[in-house]
Image (cartoon, rainbow, N blue to C red; front, side, top):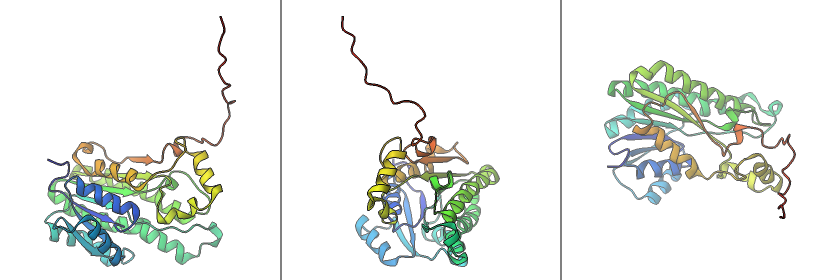
Length: 267
């Protein structure tokens, strides 16, 4: 039996690069998956790529619409008969100095990256509590663990999402609900393509990551499956950085001399 046989997972931002891999990994583990995105054409391409089946269902939703976000968990439950895992993956960001972000951009980022996960979680919790079980996995960011230039709204939203994860764990652990977060580092996607079009940015990523590289979307999907499945049943309220060790320390600051080449002693 696969790890998630018979379980139902709702994945937001399913048409994006990370979302697609999360959906693929959950389905491979036996889950039935509700694919949620505002990109209807992207959802159609994803379903065609995965191979249509009654274990997949498309939901075209603008998560900035409070009413639509609130209604979504019940729609998924009504379609599949249960709701066992909520993966809040959808996100947006701007890359610009704080003083250049206008209030509308600020609010939109918080709407998608923070308010939508709150509304979805708030609506999913009673469904999961009635079942006696449920997993909520929030896709945060290493930018929610450490400050980065030109990402004020994004970093603030992801930092708050991490705290929302902990509050959910504290308030609803006794209901059988587990809430955890994943904090990806740099992942190669369409949203981060500018990183890899600049030699300076690519060099900076390599210099600051202990693994000297960056992640692929599948690197984020595997921990999601773990947190959505039964092997993580006693893990609650934690944030797992999936960043190659970036936030473990400041690799770019070398305060010790580089080791010299070892001299071979001659007898």
